[in-house]
Image 1 (spheres, rainbow, N blue to C red):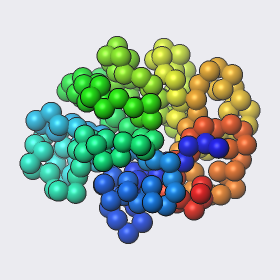
Image 2: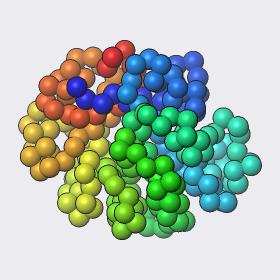
Image 3: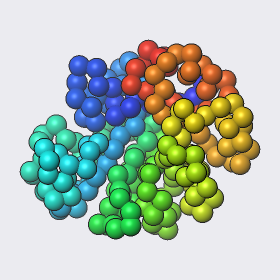
Image 4: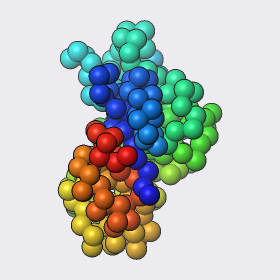
Length: 210
């Protein structure tokens, strides 16, 4: 049985990427959730999908300037210690504002075998690996991005689910990777991916997986 994760929690009647959305994911029977992380101007890691809020970059705002519904990553880790959590670090290569260091320090204070970090940014993954953060996952929606995985030392690969076939899943697993597929919203597709050995499924609709 693969891990079943809510995409940004479960945004059914609540706002995505909030404590309420994460709580709902668990209440509906999922094993955990995926979330997105940015760093504020004052160095706090917060949970939000887009790089901007109301047209203003989150990196230019302080924590006090954010609305109350935007949780800190620390608050999430404190609130859901038993949940499986995939932390997607939002980052744009090649620049860094130190968010990898901040994330490594925070995760060291909340050690858990149920938390792992992913990113579309290969440079962010390299920085995290050098900081000792593990396990890591490479997110991708273009198949050629997979060629970067051996250079990054990742344990997980996180392909867009449409890229996966039975043969591709087998190839990834033979290469030693754990596989997470996103975003899986149909029951039949979830069943096929499960049969092929995919180890985690991210969904917008818990009923497709539960």
